[in-house]
Image (cartoon, rainbow, N blue to C red; front, side, top):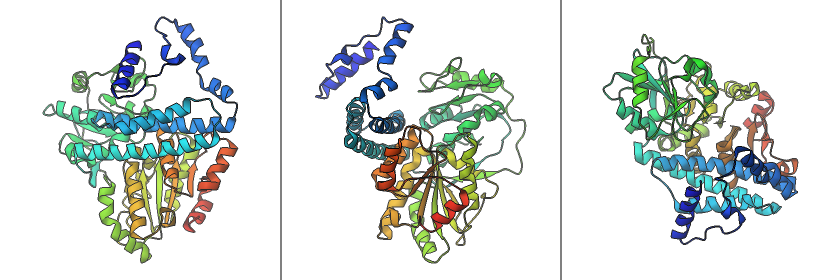
Length: 465
């Protein structure tokens, strides 16, 4: 830790900055026992900051900004994995953290800081979009097989496409099929990845189902930057972590060396047969693919073929009330266009009612725009449609309904608010760290509202409310 601190201080000096010189800069915990570390932790804990600040509303804004900035940093980590980093963005991240570290109860300053975090998140998402496209080629609509292919196999879950690419290179010619899971599904839309014939398909759904889905997969599993759950005994000996992911008792891979995983795959039974008829799902409706369709979408709206556009997505979880998003999509009028992304999209793309539905002009009714990492695509599509119709995003025949859970969702939400987007429905429950007074500010300025009864919400949204 001391070595890392010194290296960071040297780097700050090299960039012409001033390294911290106050009390925190001289903290040395290297000789502390576990008990002493725990005791010190209380002095810099979240509850201690709340007490020191002495204002629940200001502390609420600190939590809003902190969760969102952590999400933006997670997106920045994906950029870094691809060799992309913007020093100006990193400077703004440090400035935002400096504001969040202060115990000054500055309501207006903290609100402004939260919106600045949204701006930072938007910049990072744009950089990540460019990094993916420049590294692996522009994503394009692609059919992905979602049923088994006979043979030895490896499953890859998480966000970092560069890890998948390294695995595909190392498994070439070894008779091992590679499957994606969860957040890795959009990988199939990139030319630089789908060119590998042994990237055969996608297995499973979202992160919260991994204990059941991983148990049924007949080969080793690699979890990159993803929401890993405590593994069950039946697959603990064949799951591996990499990058920021780690769980006690799970082998952590270094330097993208997948030798041990490949050996494990060769010793596992693999899928005994190919499932026929095969099932497929189409991914790759990135903004580069959707914008050329903008004319058709506008024409369909003007002719009444599309009554309204809905963006339904975000994070997902196992709570029962998250079924709201499934029911919402399934109960919408058949002439609505649905854009979906993030883990919550799994509720839509696996819905028997929505699979293979088309609109009156032949367009797919549900467009899979990718993961939460791909939120920038939804932003681009909305802003470009608004430009084409000479209106604001808020004037579009567009309703947003977002499933909230963790830091990345908070980052995307603040990006939308910073853009001035209003009338967002957020659920299935509002974040616990938002106080009534902060909620009132969000309602008054952005008309944020909680999800409610599905039929009532549909009626209001179809009326543009």
